[in-house]
Image (cartoon, rainbow, N blue to C red):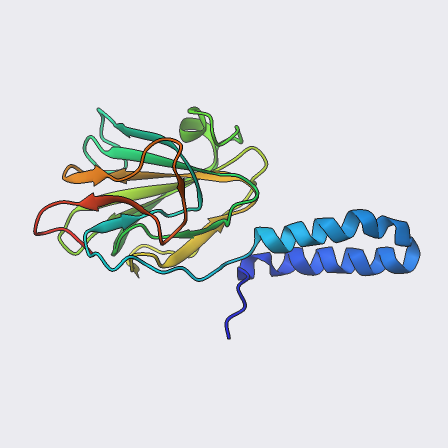
Amino acid sequence: MRIPIAREGYPFILAAIVCVVIAGFLLPVLEVIFIPAAVFVIAFFRDPERTIPADRNSIVSPADGKIIKVERLGEKKFRVDSPLKISIFMNVFNVHVNRAPSSGKVVDIVYNKGKFFSANLDKASLENEQNALILENPSGRVFAFNQIAGLIARRIVCHAKVGMSLAKGERFGMIRFGSRVDVFLPAGCRAAVNVGDKVRAGSSILGYWEGTDAGQ
């Protein structure tokens, strides 16, 4: 059976357990601090299985969290003309493993070292550390999703490479300790969420491709 913990968390979990053991030998009173910390670290890196919607035209959330933005942009972004932008904010208690919102081939990855503003602020999309994946679906339509680091997040993890194909709901990376993911969908897509909605990566539907040439 698969262990429902992201492998990126193994070093942090091991370090937390070592701290608990050392505290237990040297100064047991410190276990009151280290045991809850270890539990938090294990919970943060949890990676549960998800049921991916079978509807071929559905677009799923790439992250667990809360919808903080649903808007149509007037300018081109990540090769997508006037995209429908949907932003998901992840707090430190959400699952942080990211999944592909729709199937496609990775045609480009754009990384920006950036800064570390709180991920729920608009300027985070402009100035924070971020990693954007640009994909082309089987019908030739381009869409993108952007991992954005938060105030205390200092490491974006992305396993996808240019030329790789991702399936809808497939894991491709994570962001450590609080973050945000923006999705950019082309014309012909409609949103199925509103600001304030709670979503789960891989299983919650963000929107739909429209037209016979769309889908996974």
